[in-house]
Image 1 (cartoon, rainbow, N blue to C red):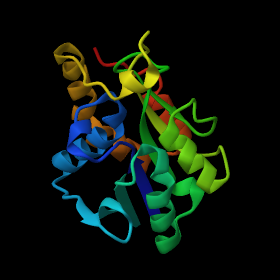
Image 2 (image 1 turned 135 degrees about the vertical axis):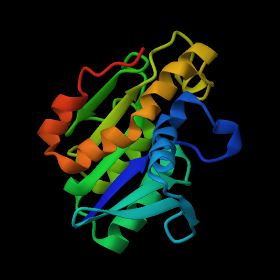
Image 3 (image 1 turned 120 degrees about the vertical axis):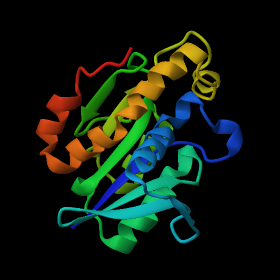
Image 4 (image 1 turned 30 degrees about the vertical axis):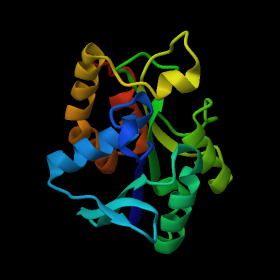
Length: 190
């Protein structure tokens, strides 16, 4: 069976270490700890790597279509490898959750997150599994905030989140989604 894990972000260098790139950073960390190397694919318009987990083929994807058009990259890989909606996990930042807090959800609205909104639009369902990484709210403009870099203190917390990327993704791959939600929800890094 083919499964897809998508980390959301913006690909150009000026977006590195910004709040909106929490999904990209998480996927990068998983690859680093798993000795996997992402490679750019023109066909899928993003960086991709595949690996085996038990009897499944797992695809990791970082769309290079910018956040608001994440669906373009996702649509290409989903169609090419016939990946079912239920076998997709989106990893993304969430301003409605405190910094360093993780939440897993099976369905729901995008919560205003444009990358997830784009993917929900393409899949035509709110039943999209997601792993949300809290980046906290701010009183400044949402766009300015999510495109800003983490402070040194905040980056320490995000590094702790990312240091568990391999454990978290392996738990997702080895469990039912209900078990995964129990494992994730309430997890907070400080």
